[in-house]
Image (cartoon, rainbow, N blue to C red; front, side, top):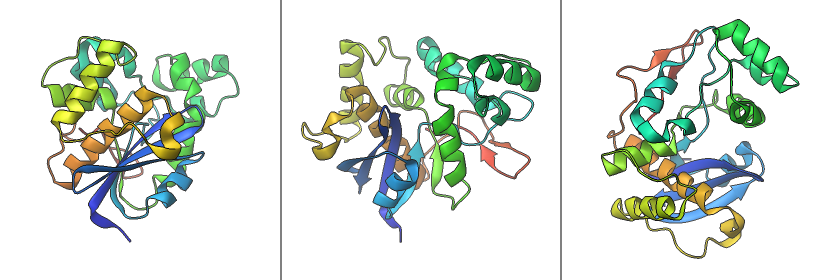
Length: 227
C-alpha cells in the first residue's frame, strides 16, 4: 500500500542499489539492497520511485530524451549516455554490443553504458509492474535545482559541496549517519537524494520532462527523463 507522503530516489552503486526516502518532503532514511526488486520491497509505501537508470529501451533509433538531457546539463553532458537497444545490452562482450548497437541504431555505445547493462535489464523487468517508477538523471535534477549549469563534476570536492548545498536549499538535509547505508559512496547517496527531489516534484505534479512530450514506444510506454 502506497503513502502519498512518501517518495524515494534510487541510484546504482557497486553492491547493488541505494534508495533515499523523503516523507512529507523531508529526508527519512536511506536503504541498500543487492537487487532492485528487494529495494522496492523495502519501500512498499513509496508513491513514486525515481530511478537513475534508463526505463524504456530503444529499438532502431536513439531516444530523444537522452540527447535533450545531455544538452540540458551542458558541461556535464558526458554523464548522460545514449541508451543502447536490448540486443546490445544482452551481448556477451563489448565488441558484440558495439556491433549490435551500430546495426540497430547507427551509433556506437560507451563502455559505461555496457557496464550498466545488467542493471538496465534488471530494471526493465520490474518497470512493467505498476506505474510508480519514473526515470530521472541526477545531473539533470541538479541543473534544474541550480537554475544554471554546474561548474564542477560531482567527483570533485567543490562539486560535492555544490550539490549538497543545492539539496539543503531544497530542504533535503542528508545526515552524517545513514545506518546500514554508511558504506555507500558519497556521490551515489547524493545522486539518490537528487532523484528523490525529482520524485517529490513528480508527486506534486511539479515535475518537467526534458522533452516537451514523452516519446511513446511500441509497447505503449511513455519514455522521458523527469526532473
